[in-house]
Image (cartoon, rainbow, N blue to C red; front, side):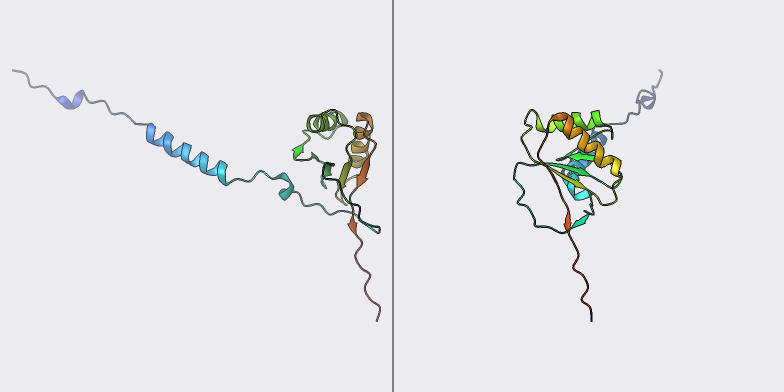
Length: 144
């Protein structure tokens, strides 16, 4: 009579279901706790100017240019820094409404070419109401 060894028939296996469950829980946790607000990341130092503040319209289009010359139209970033890419991003956000006021916010350290590119893209699209955002001038130190 032959005695069979049952251990030879057992094939070890790795159960991946608990591992996948843990990974999905981690992904959900990171997605929920991550904020996607692009404006909180951008730190702009606006140029200083004297003048009266203007009441900004609630439906104005915000065009931000950071110190590196990257463009942000409302909450969308333009993929490249050329005119055509900026025009595509503006059209995606605005659509056909060319009567909106555009509030241009450029960092004080922004290269001038980036600002000129923004004006060129807005002009080619037909925007005529463009406002520049500035910070108020710092008060002069009192002479003693």
